[in-house]
Amino acid sequence: MTLAALLVVGSGLFVLGIVTAVQRRSLIGMALGLVLSCGALIVLASALFDLTGDEPSTGQVVAVAVIAFAAAGAVLLAALHLAAARANRGAEDLEPW
Amino acid sequence: MNWSGLVFGASAALALGAGAGAAFARRTRHAVVALAAAMCGVAGICLTLGNDFVAIAALTVLGAGVPSVLLAAVLLAPPAEPDLRPGAARRAVLAALGAVCFGALALLLTRTPWAPPGGSRQTQIEWLGSRLLTDHLLTLGLVCLMLATAAMGAVAVLRARRAGPR
Image 1: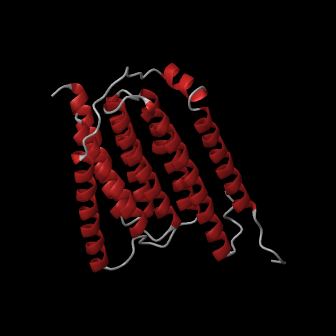
Image 2: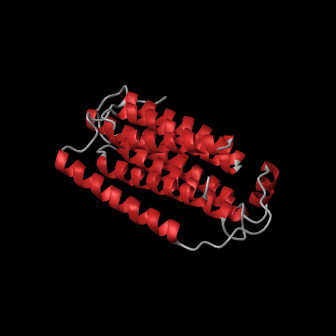
Image 3: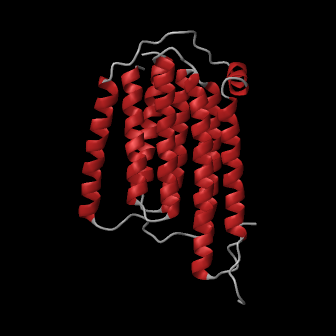
């Protein structure tokens, strides 16, 4: 496992996330792209901070922040998707609780 | 090749393969399952780097929690199928553009002369907790604020009622 291999994997995952967000039509698809891109950022931050520079472990702090950002964004997009579906259909059975 | 290399190779293949599945699966629920598998691959990569806490957080939050929420949303309100934008030409152009972007990004990152590693590497969870509560306290506060805002925003969006009689 080398730094170059980690960077290539992170780059591939990031581009896949962007392609997912562009290619899909629904808000859920955008959430998928967001989470995939955040996974790539976790890999890149872990690799760059752990294997280069003088702050070898700051990547973990960055990764925790990125995980929280991905979770917050995905929950918001899922809520917006449900709200949009409820507004479009006027259905009463889309209450999530 | 040692065990770490094997785990890294399997995790990288899982992350990229499942990521491609999430990007191009025709049904949204299949894409969500592929996303969960891709995040398991990301967790495996973090595990090979020695970042145990990040691996567990990625596995539980991004590999289980977020896909569960998205799957529930898909089952409650299924999006139009197929979820992919129509047009084979558009898909081909997007795939070519993605390949070019991937090549450029990978070349840029691998050709950059990164500084050699220095300092003592810490991977203990206690160390991470102490850093979060001392040097990165502002980061922790902002993360908590962001999560609270997202939760309140989601509740506000879902509790909103249309004006006027139904």
